Image (cartoon, rainbow over all chains, first blue to last red; front, side, top):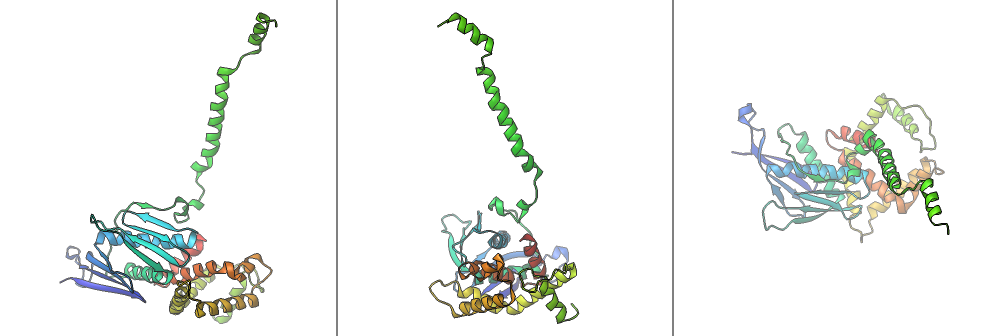
Length: 195
Length: 126
C-alpha cells in the first residue's frame, strides 16, 4: 500500500505518492521513494509526473521566482520546462513531455497561482514526512541573473580586459615592424631616383 | 521587541520617512522586523493574493486594486518625505505598479515556515 501526502495552498494542491525506505528503518507514513506526483491548479490541466521530473520543475519555479524579483525580463529554459513572463502579471509555462510525439503543455499562470504553486513546493520542502533526492538538470538562465553572483568581484574578469588590450596593442604594433622602412633606405631610393 | 512602541520607534530608521532618525538599527532588531513582516504576510496572504489576482485581468478595472493603490498613495503622502525622488517614484501611479507588484510577490513567496530565511535572502540580494 502506497502513502499519499497532500499540500494545499488556495488554488493549488500538490499530491505526493510513494513508499518509505524500509532499508533505512523509516516510519510507515514516511515517503522516500516517490512513485508519482500530481500538481492540481484550479482551471488548469492536471500536471503529473515521476520523481525525476519533480526536482527540476521545483527548481525551475524557484529560480524563476528569484529572477522575477531581481530581473526585468525573467526567462527560465530547460529540457523539461520553460517559463517566461508575458507581462508583470502573467507567466507563460511550457511543460515538455519526455515521451516522443507528445505536444508540450502550455499554461498561462497569474501571480496569484504562481505564488500558490511555490507555497505548495515550500510545504513539500519543509515536510519531515517526504524526502526528495535532488537530480541534476541542465538549465539556461541568463548569466546576469544567476542569484546575484555577478555582484561579487571576479578577479579573472577584472584583469582579463586590460590583458586583452595589451595583447592587441602588441599584435597591432608588431605588424608595423614588417612595413617599416628605415630612413637610410629612403635616402638611397632618393639617390637612385633624383627626380 | 519589548513592546509596540519599540516597533514604532524602529520605523523612523526608514530614510524615506518624514520623521527619519538615524539610530543605526541593530542586527537583532532587523531580524525581529523581518520575523514580524513574515508573520503579517502569512496573516494577510488571502488579501495579498486577491490584490495580485485583481491585476491579472487587464480589461477589468478592479475596485480592490484601485482602493489599495489610493490608500497606499495617501499613506505615503502623509508619512513619507515627498521631496525625495524615490518617494516621488512611489507616488507616480504610472510607475508604482511594478514596485507594488514586486513587493507583494516577495511577501507572498515568504509565507512558509522558512519564510523568514527567504525574505532575508531577498532583502540581501536587493
